[in-house]
Image 1 (cartoon, rainbow, N blue to C red):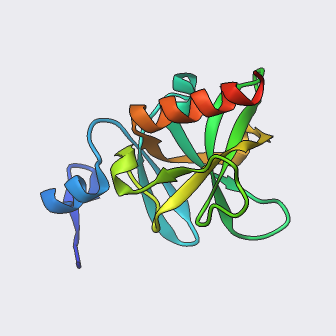
Image 2: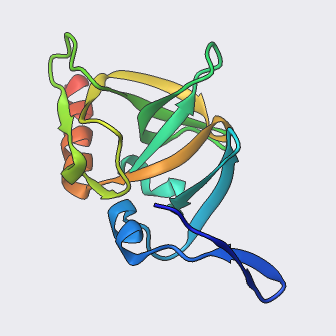
Length: 149
C-alpha cells in the first residue's frame, strides 16, 4: 500500500489507514526508529511488565535480529530473556506462539518459545517489537518455574 508524506503544521506526517493500524495492533503511544533506511513503528510498552514483552535482540555476531521473550529485569542494564525460534527443535516443552498469541504486534511466522533456553542481554541492545498475550506469558512463566522444581 502506498502513502504520501504531507505537511502537518511545522512537521511532516503520514496518514496511516485504519486497517493497517488494526493489522499491526497499534494504539496509543508508539516508538519510531529507523532500521536499514526504513521507518519502524512499534507500540510503547514498559520493560517492567516482565514476560509480556517480546523483543528482537541484536546478535553481535551477525547482522540480523533474533526474537526473545523477556523473563526478568536483572539490574539497571540487563534483562533475562527466553529464546523464541521458528522450530521447536528438541525442546521438551515448547510453547506455540501464533498470531493469536500476541496482544500487540506479531512475528512473521508461527514460532515457539523455548522456556529452557534462558540467557541475559543488555537492555540497550534490544528493541520492543510486540506484546505477548497474557495467557501465553503465564504459560511461559509456569514452564520456567517448572525448571527449578
